[in-house]
Length: 341
Image (cartoon, rainbow, N blue to C red; front, side, top):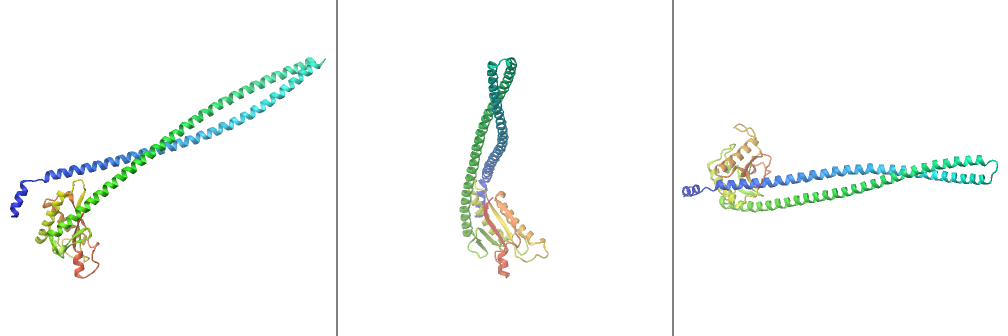
């Protein structure tokens, strides 16, 4: 009966197509994650570039502010000079008028007074020229101040645009991260549901055996079910148990959607007794060799290697803290855990 079933199964081999589909979906997931990481990288680099530009603009603003303060100080000094020249001009005009009055009233000293008036008029012209130059400088300073104000306004607009762009980039990054977290949570929930179905199916197949049990999210085989003492070769009875396990895993591969990145992790554990003699130098080596032996046997039964992982924990992860023979037997075990990759 089993031989006939195997022949019918081999006549229609769906595995190559199934493996191709799984590989394609894995590549798609990797591509999407790569696109997300690239998008996050470029957005982060853009934000960093904006921060650098913002720092440069702030530095320019400080330089322009210093220049504006200097120009204002110069303008104040020029205004003081203009006030002083205006006062001198008024004094000169008053003196000129006084001389003219004296010339009109004078007699013999009229010619001398006229010379003095001419000199005063010349001095007045000189003062007027100086005042004109000062006013021209004031106009130039006003133009420079106006130009500086326009530059400051342009810089402020650039700063506001840069800050707006940075906020938009941060919002995009936060939105992408939130979407990724939601997607991962959904995949974890789906995997938990398939894990529950898988363990339930194993219970039905293997029956209620005291040496095979469920502990938390793991399916536990005591080592005596699969191996002889201090050995890593699977016993004939252990191969029968693993055949049932392999059939359940093959059914699981067909049921779980290809976009869920799951693996069946095989963990090897030993008791706390030290190894003496034999091919293994430590419990680390024995636990790892047993886990690898289980994985290799499952692969020989048609399970995809990319869905399996082997790990050895030695005696350092006991599930029973006791030191009697029963506790040591519980700690010598192979654990199966359906988890995400």
